[in-house]
Length: 198
Image 1 (cartoon, rainbow, N blue to C red):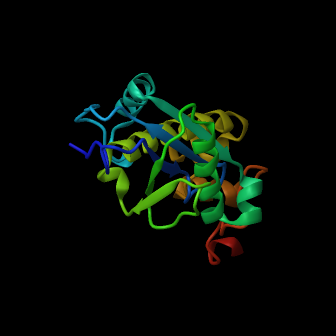
Image 2: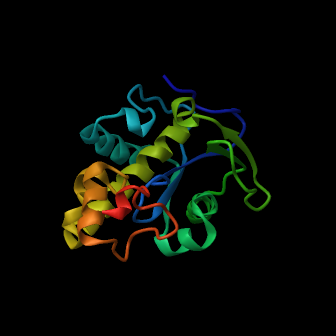
Image 3: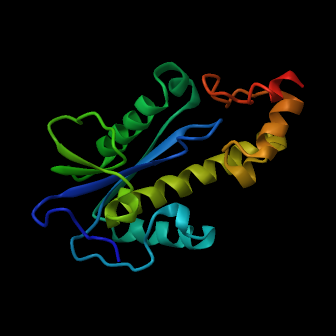
């Protein structure tokens, strides 16, 4: 089971993002403050959890959390400030939306910019170590997946219902055949150089 907290006396918010490596759509971040005594043996890095269980856990987290929030930074902003800055900005927005102010942030990954006066700790693979970060990863992932399913209805030929905007063969075949669309991140390499010649 994952760790319940970094320090028991902190009001800790776990933060994580989803969609950083995608070619289209927003990057989504979540912030979650869990009760210190909260336990759930199924919560883990969202990428390790089957889709059906991800959605069940996301609903349970929303019910159990002392506070939670999700925030998006769209593809246009990603192209303007780059994906790292956009991911950090999305986390800032998520923390900003919490209805309980944390005094400590647990951040998944190794890069972050300080948010106001709140202390933070970056944790590589934190979503496999801390419960609150894993909870945030589940909320971010399920929120973004739902969003990409809706965008798929508008542009079905990219297969976003299956790949959620990640650079799969199906997604790139769609770009080759139909070109990119208004939701694609133009600053990303949408097609490898050898494929763009076809």
